[in-house]
Length: 188
Image 1 (cartoon, rainbow, N blue to C red):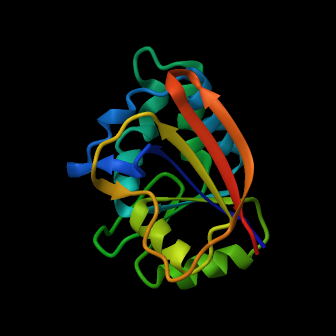
Image 2 (spheres, rainbow, N blue to C red):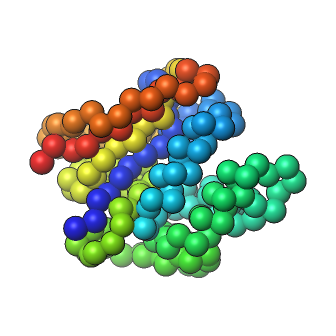
């Protein structure tokens, strides 16, 4: 069975985007944090995206390695992003590119099916999609890169749950700028 990992940058008060989908609070990540995310992406065998995150990622990373002044890690991230198989869950878009498959039906049924396959870990991103997977008990690991900023509202990292989810701390690491990375595994 494949592991499903939900990880994103978030504010100290728990938001992945401020009101109006503003992610300006995160600024460019430190080289060390960017490398950590790159290592996670390289370890992922499949990336699962909700529509909004897909639109954000696909607006930059297909050509991110061709941008002026692209750092070596950014070049590698862009190449890895294009090469990694991806699944986008959306009922409002009709076409995807870059080694990506579109699913317009039941996301939970498809994620459950994908988890049952052999293969490397899967990453999931996008608050709505990850929230549905959380409520269905499908998330195996959480990775939170918490920035020292409060935005007061927006898109929360965590969703409302029907029951508690107990976690075990796996890793804590501090990055420049006071960003604290914590990883937790779901206790089963």
